[in-house]
Length: 121
Image (tube, rainbow, N blue to C red; front, top):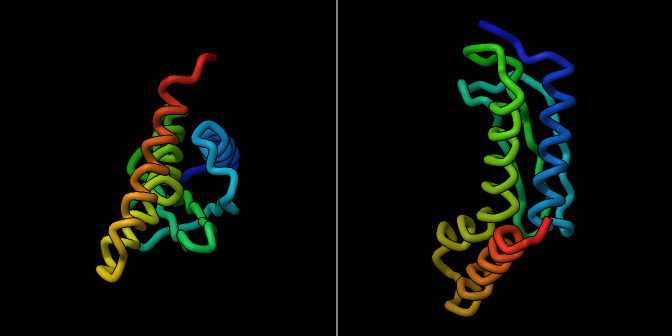
């Protein structure tokens, strides 16, 4: 089974930072780690949406040698899952949230997507 290298991890970490910046997730603390994950995921993230803290783990074992495009797509996936949608997931699992909390979080995600999609480069 191919292993991700230190160079792959450095690229992955750079892509995580790129997408954190591009999505404007400035209020989050992000940490990246390079370690073997129990499941065969390319990466996995643990996060706390209230404290806005996320640890993004790049799996050392992949089924193939990762390309730069795969590393970037994986980084983007993890950033979106935690930083963009994590709070909505927490609210859905909690079932004790208010409609105002749900509406507020939904609009936060919409504003981020608006800023991303309508940004002039």
